[in-house]
Image (cartoon, rainbow, N blue to C red; front, side, top):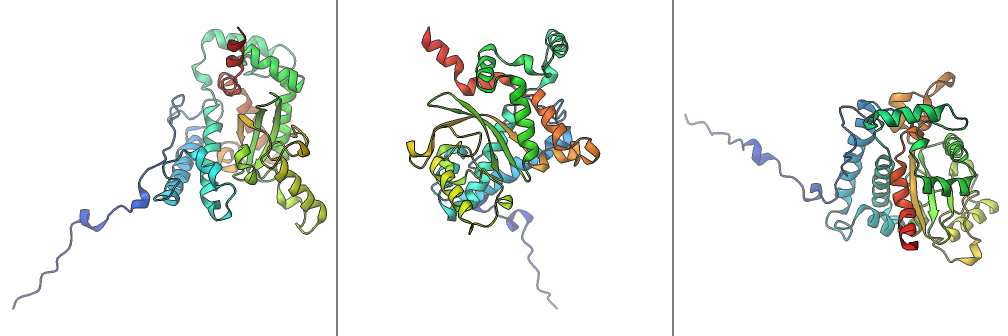
Length: 311
């Protein structure tokens, strides 16, 4: 008796990658860090793996799936978030693009302090003996230091504002140091969730925790939202660059210089929740301040280019 033969296809024929999985956008390369070492002074190898390697791969994969075959697939991540910020039906694309960009800027402005020379470490130990100086601040370039002191009265004031602002955020988001491209003023502002500080994306600034703002039916809440929508970046207290009646919707042209990521997946593994006043977000922010790459911050601010033009 003849038995029918069951033809089983080879494994290679069982799976075909979907078009939506092709890589259009890519995870940036962080040349200053070795994944086996993590971020010295800030994140363990495991913490770095979650906050950067796994998370960036996740958001980029989601972004590629959502943009494949659309007008956004060949645009940069920054172009995508700006183009989708105003369209509610593009909210998922904006969220993943903005998170990818924000997290990348956060990590790119962190220095590998383990590569410092012995002279650098000796200079740091001498700076620690001076009052009101935190470790890492000796790496601030002179021109940038002058601008920061002019704007915030001292670098220590800026450090405290970053810490206080981050601790006051009830929920995930980002704390930014931004520069007004028109006046060169600097301000600290916050964006919750995947909010962006860019003027072109001011519709998704998300500068307030709406869980603390009451109902949108309240007149004061509606008025406050309208003011933020009209002024865009720098619209909340401590971040207003110019009166709202001097500029149409879109706000001022703000340049992000420094980004602090306060999402819990970044710091919870290494610092815990902070129970009993030990560890937690506060210790993470203090450690981050000591690891900032101030040369990159100066580069984003354009201070050096201005000096060259004046010569």
